[in-house]
Length: 293
Image 1 (tube, rainbow, N blue to C red):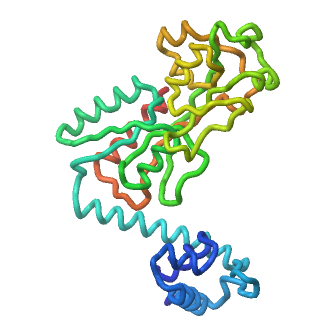
Image 2 (image 1 turned 135 degrees about the vertical axis):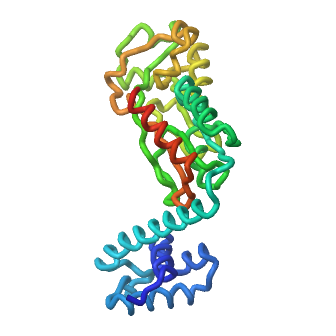
Image 3 (image 1 turned 180 degrees about the horizontal axis):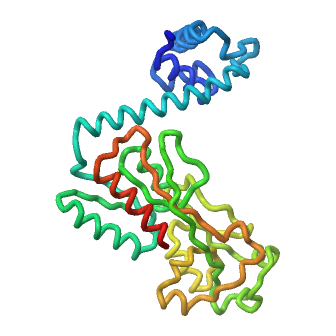
């Protein structure tokens, strides 16, 4: 076995980027070094990873199988290095947590209270965002952990742990025309403006049901505009726990929109980041907390 991690990295990056030249740009190396690394890897393995007969190299069947294995090896190496870094530096003295603005307030207030008691010397920073903001901040190392409602795609550098699901409610103002229908069809909903959640930077948003829709980055502001009779919306049920929100909105049957009735919440961290005692405790504690809900 003579292949190296540098060769595997060149191979995996080339597959993800679609070409040797794109991989070279991403890795900051000359294209010739990428091509040579992959050729040497093929020689060490004893078979071709790419079919080079086309304009761009295409994975062979053996190459597709090796791509899966190579990714797993590189990911495990990242975890190993992260663990070594954590052992060398010891327990975290400071952490930044990114929090979706619509997570259940009471749950996380209790969670952070327990954290303050368990680790009284920890310096904690909490930042709030919406949707893909959270994942982006963790990926860019602006936050160590992120608690978010699941978005469609996550960077390969992130690990995601699902914590559970929350039900969503279909709400309108008592003055809204849909309030008289109570069990609206998709045709009914499409005739009126929908208020749809999105992240703050505009990279991710929920799929709209109505052709007439607005994008807004806060479930609470969406609910406030529903109360103002601006449109209808799907929001997590716990957002409506406030007596004000509950009394000022009408909840309709969502029988005809079953695919949108649940929203997943989870936690993300970078795969290459270490986990000391504090982060391990946080992940265990929040997982146990959601298991009880």
